[in-house]
Length: 222
Image (cartoon, rainbow, N blue to C red; front, side, top):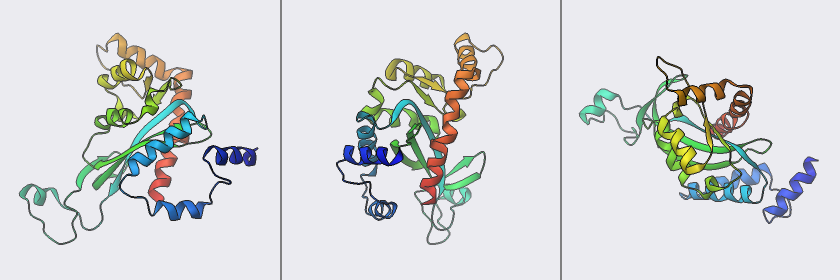
């Protein structure tokens, strides 16, 4: 079954066979600065050729350490570079699991399901909030205008009223992420909480763990 699927995938990509992992590794080393456009184009082709399931998509980010020595905040504020080799373009960002990291942040959207494919990507300094990159990532590709999209799953960093409205009015999809209840919670927010905690909501949200989370770890490992 997998061999048949691979042959269909190769034909759809205009190839005789699917390239080996070593071929992909060699090719990736030559990719130029238009990587964002390449990822977006690849994701769109996979989507329009119906090689991937677009009904549930995912978004996430990860911090990446800058090379060389860190630039401490006290020196940064004074404009002092204490030693050579410091990446002065990098900034400090905080992760609940890894603490403070001096570097950059990879922002990524992808498909879920059997085939996990990156759809859009961007890199910012580590201090840029996740929710600030949501609209740029989903508006930079025509993928997110396709009618087959239904849900976007995300972590609590994307829990923002602005994004819920944007998803409904602009993308026509639902944003599913952990929603905290607080005193005098508005009804619209209560509805979001109820759906997230429902069996269907949890089934959809669990797609993050088997799609974008391992994809990001794989990207960082290579």
